[in-house]
Length: 185
Image (cartoon, rainbow, N blue to C red; front, side, top):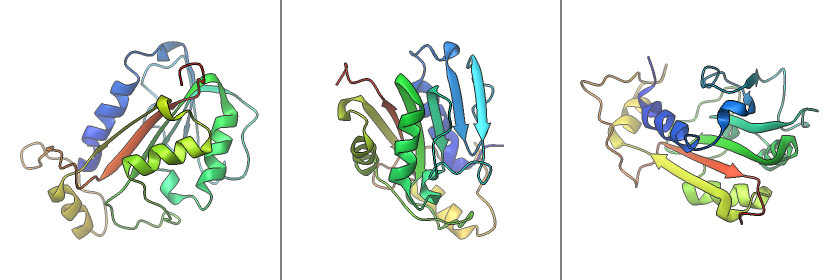
């Protein structure tokens, strides 16, 4: 069962790839494996502490790197994003999602929050062309309150009782797809 907070995020981030040739791509997911059955030609996942994205890039290149709910836990997010860029093939993509209005979750630490605007300009400052960054967000007061009140785990989605209405002023998750193609900027 999926977490309530991720229902729309999962749907919308998948839509970002709809018109791209992802079936031919070499993809790496950092600290997760949610995308392993998406249909990529090659898929690799790597987890912390096996790999610390802040320390150094891998000696491999990818068409797409995915970091879902990772960057809020990093002490050095700029360093990590620069490492991501160095591992992308020319014209590569970076799909990132982060929480915003969510309780502190020290797994192992919790450091940063971004709005859509903040995430877009963070990615731009790291080296992605500003015009090549698409952002989105979803939030809902009921979902935020339920997850803050539930101290032990994230609330699972119940379609009979949980609303998926988006309240733009209360973003729970924020995401972006950044394209490292300077010819489009």
